[in-house]
Image 1 (cartoon, rainbow, N blue to C red):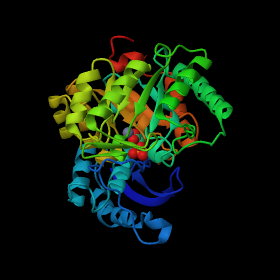
Image 2: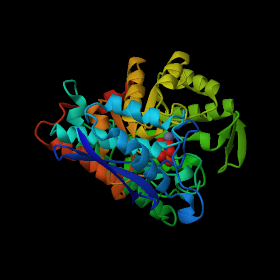
Image 3: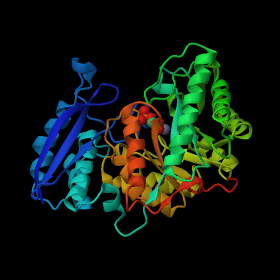
Image 4: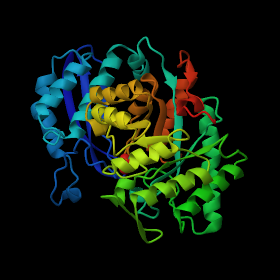
Length: 425
Ligand code: PGA
Ligand code: ZN
């Protein structure tokens, strides 16, 4: 049973306030949950409760903390900590809004994750194993950012994430080794070709390119410089995050100073798929461009993974709709988009039932919290995305994966390239 709940303000990887909740059980064990924060958010995500006003540019979370102490804690103390679904239902009811704007998605997800951690601690199990129970747990295939653009780098490139997937890796640890080399080589190429401008919000190199294609060319060159074969050892994954620059069927590409329609955007991306060793594209069209997403998935959905992030917002109903109309074939799973662990799992289960692939993902604003690594493993998601290969809020997560894989009693297998479900790999 839960004996106490404490909420506190801590600071995320952008130096902004965020919510941490600590749930303590009567048996003395406890668990901590932390809310991450996005920069390129979907409009249908659970809403973050921030104080507004002048202090910390309005980003403080005192209202969210007060809601936990005043409304949530008294309701949950005494509850069975194992009853995640029941506790999440109480959280949803206490909030009472469709988008979790009263108590805040940040307050709710921190509480929900703290309850989950506390339950695993009380069962004396690592979180991933507690989640897997008797079903299979698998080490996920990582998607790792090399250049970070879009909203994470002052919009230096239109595309947000230029990532790699180590398709040839036989273990999680080997995927890290291969990516480390590509990341280092990409940094060398950047330094040789112009002033090195540091790293973006998720640790990817700050992109000093003239075009999106130049970034893609440099990524291929970095894979080759690392003595790896583009496409078979290491392939490319992109998060276009196109809701950031596309609205009502119009896409404004700042680098080329052009505005194009949905068809032209779709054709541009199809050309990239033909020209570069790309295996995955996230949010290729904007969240309000369902017809575009359907057209794009029809064009390349057999060849690559088409991932819905802003469009699906970790919502089971939206995943089901997307599957029915063929608007993607993979879902990005971000717990704070949904607001509770139970709703997050429901979106993942809906995706699996529809034959979609699944990727558990961090946000651009993170902390040293490693919960999502355990979710990806214990829920057998197949893939994990946490940003780049630098900055310790990212490395904490990759390193946690290495630790879990190397310990006795580790998950039986590594998902590997099979997680992408693509026949040509
Ligand atoms: P965000 O970006 O966390 O800034 O929303 C991550 C993503 O778009 O996948
Ligand atoms: Zn995204």
